Amino acid sequence: MPESETEHLDYYPSGWSEEIHDEYYVEWIWDDDQTIFVRLDGTMGDGDYTVTPITGVNVDGEEFVTKPISGLSRPEAFDVAATLIYAMNGVTGRLNGEDEFTGDTSN
Image (cartoon, rainbow, N blue to C red):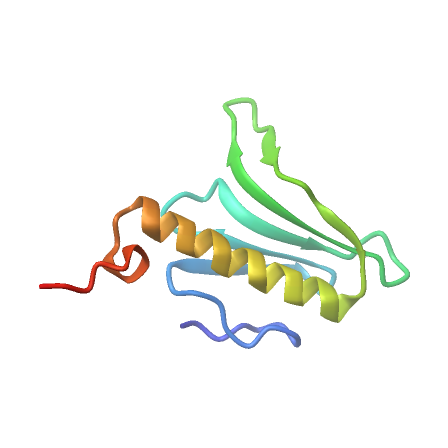
């Protein structure tokens, strides 16, 4: 697992990239489909962070945004982001039929 360069997240799953735009704006992007990512945004100020899972971008560049979670402190935002990154990673692994995520451990 890659080590995060952020202060509140130790690691993120392999197959994802971390893009740090600045200390208040970070995205974790699934390498196989860069329209799937998790955005942490603290640019609203005063410790008001929002975490948004993005599950696609249409041809017009509009993001398919699932329910953003806002009003978070910085540590809470990183906890939520980590949960979403790992959840989305598990779903993509399962949909791709990867044994690690399907429970198929028989030979």
